[in-house]
Length: 192
Image (cartoon, rainbow, N blue to C red; front, side, top):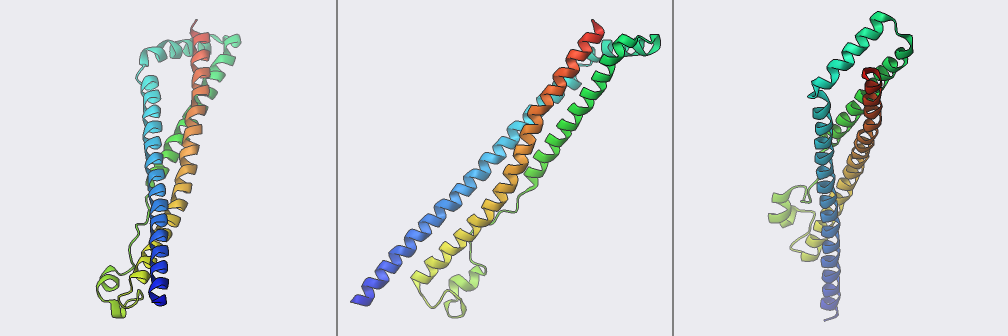
């Protein structure tokens, strides 16, 4: 009688632990999905920036003609703006390159773990040779909770790495707007 009460408490504890580990695992899965949706948003934002800049060729024609006139006519007062254009354009390309590479690297991090026994056939069907024990529901639930815990811990590390690269991509994207604005402002100074 007392043995049954102890086993019932142990079984209840193991079920509670399994539910807790499953919730932690689900939280890490949700975190992964949120990070991946952020990456998609940032990449589409970068695509919009690149598309608006690179497909607006009509803006670059007067700028290149003005730079050509400045270089040929030796207009020294405008050299400053030409250097500003080259420097800001280079910095903008570097920021965009860093953003794209870091976001692509974060998408590459896909080494996530799923909770399952190491040898499912042996562990689920051949109890005698299994480390789970002979027909022990408590031991089985305990091992499942451990597998969920290990998978959640591993996925947490992967999410931290992914979060770092998404953050680098975000800041590079935001900072790329500054040299782009300086580039456009300098180009307008030269043309007009």
